[in-house]
Image (cartoon, rainbow, N blue to C red; front, top):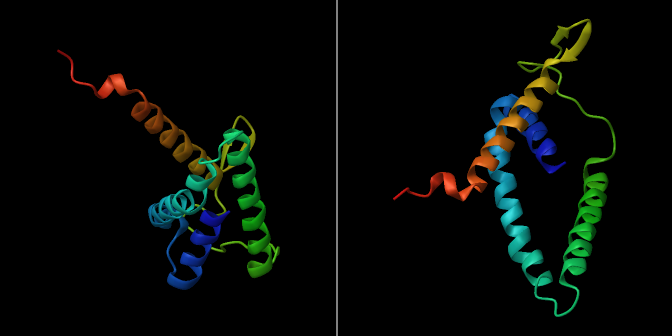
Length: 129
């Protein structure tokens, strides 16, 4: 949700296409996630009993707080970006029309997931004797 609002406001205030804004938004979300960990999650993990549930309830409460603040400050009204590089374009696959922005998002998500899987496999990057 915050990434979506970040891309939207970068478009509104600086006329940056959402596709080009993605690296800036991702960097901002990284900083936000690190701050949330340092300010909230780290302390929740210090619980003496039932650490898993404390962490789950802490992050669940944070999600409820973020949603409420977003609705308060940005209102729950529908917003969209009228023009973008991929907006309004569709691809027909076997008679099924698929929106290009959603296809681009799916492709980027799959690439990011693949990169994360590669990074998670420590043996790939360990030097061989």
